[in-house]
Image (cartoon, helix red, strand yellow):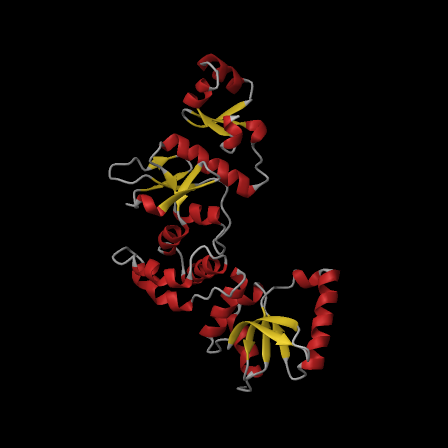
Length: 303
């Protein structure tokens, strides 16, 4: 079925190609089988699952793509969500960012933010064989211009960590935005990116530590036992202070299994690295950067 391949939506011409007459479509709309997110675009309600944000995002993008025509594709924040780049606020469940290159494009469409960026065909691709979108590099370029520093670094870290782009590609991508609004500040943020960060929380804590004057010595630092076996991997490591920084919050450590693993790891660390200390930073700590600074200053013996 066409709608199944297209995340639950199809256009009127596709419905006709499938053997439905205009009257059939009207009947299916009246009895609730079909919805109509846009004129000439229909959703098969039995195929939709609003409880699945990722799936419904695909549906919403596909519907907008059918409404806007063959030159349209997802871009910016929406493409970043589709690629799984982490660091943005969750999708609001309504609005999608779409690109229709060229001047004179209508900008006012319900639930769609339209952009008219000129994008080379080589900078677009498809997802699931049906959704058109900007490739990861172009997606990152466009999205960085509209976010704050912390979000931008999270996106760069995430794209690097997932190998959506390479370290060698990142600087040219940032420089390619020269002349666009917001490009100057994003060039300043480029040196802050580090693909070793495994979550937006790690990135944000690292930035807070750096801002406080305590940049980590290393990320994802491995601790070994006497046989060379890895017994722990630290999110952040300050060698001079012999301090491990964990940025996984309280949630993972509240589970019994995680608590047991944590105790084993800490016991191993005490045996093989007795002078190492561990501090934990949560999302809540980001709202009080003075606390992060004070913890690190005490560990460094500066207070």
